[in-house]
Length: 105
Ligand code: FES
Image (cartoon, rainbow, N blue to C red; front, side):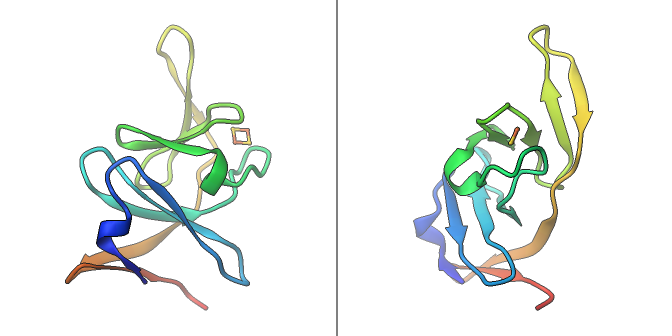
């Protein structure tokens, strides 16, 4: 769990766990998302290499981006969106000033 006010729009935070870190991020519109911390491309840690761009989390290593459903893509210089591997997302809820992530383990 995390206090809601520690995750403002555009921010990324890491939740460390033995089974693999999770990153929490808040879209520009305010939606909270929880996903695997490791980029499916070359494993960069999105807690440090990730940046929110609108409603996507962008991996700054090679600019793959992930939406709040975990779908992966990359934008070309001309704006074409190419599909990339998805990232695992986790159920998350925000209630009474707290953010809770639901994980299987
Ligand atoms: S490691 Fe994330 S885009 Fe390459």
